Length: 290
Image (cartoon, rainbow, N blue to C red; front, side):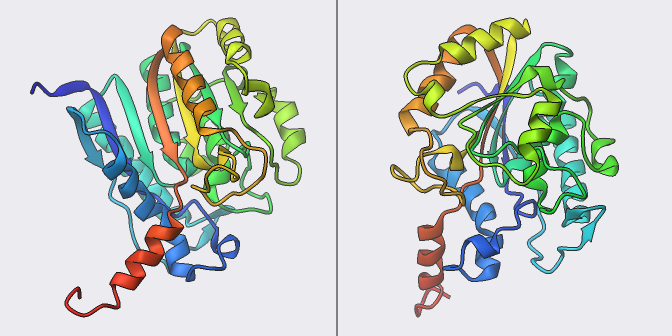
């Protein structure tokens, strides 16, 4: 089978952006922190096999390397891993990137890489329960809550200066948004980032497609955070805010976009495999398996 050289499947098991142990009291803190690492590899295992080139971003597993610098938790680890991801993309030079994370910040490098590759012609569809527009200095110091802001060129200068491009806020939309940190509604309004609730896209994708037409772009990058999903149907991420999008609705929106636009980037992020973590720990206690 001929290798698909134009698309890169990027396994990006970065976990450091999430500060989530308090939200997962049923798990050991180390397991909760590293849950995104396991989740990234599970996504790759579960995803259809393909002829795409595949690369993995090397990620530190040191759960004690969590120093807050410039208002960003695990700043130095994230900086190092950002450089590593950029190096991988420079070597492969793909036209399209499928990213399997990892916490939400795994979209930052591929999306800004694609924004540089197709200047002025990329819109971001951010499918997420949260806006991810926090900045250093806000109360929450997890970089995954700063991910969309970083794609827009906002955030820690040392990290932002590494990124190859940024997308204008007028070309970003958030779908399924229903949970904000303190002050984020106001920041979203100030930045002019449009959002649509889960209910607004439940029946059809017309509002999203109308918005995309107004941007004038031909290419789209899509971030799919698993916590956008309705916990009454499935709990796949950390967040369990009610009244989320159904699986079928997310799939339909993404496929409807693909009918009219060139999807050059697709990220699936924030998998927190609670059950798999518990099974892994159980297996680790059995004889002959150690």
